[in-house]
Length: 84
Image (cartoon, rainbow, N blue to C red):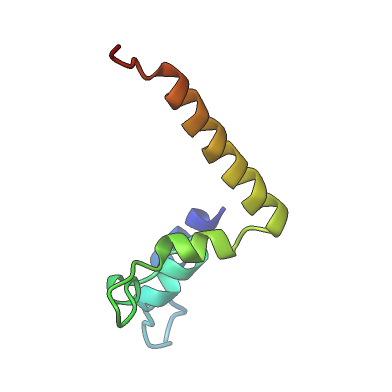
């Protein structure tokens, strides 16, 4: 859905007689939930993309995601072959 909006904005035909207005990079990226590369890191060098992704989730979705990760770790631990 968001990509359709981006394509529509990028390929929109300007009205005859009106100045051609092109969308800004921010206008193209925003509907898809993307940000410009210089906005990805904070002043401490922390990558903010995963933080933003998790903040978009509801608390229940965050809990389910964390539980799924924990379950995967437990499954991996079961598969580890330990030397005697």
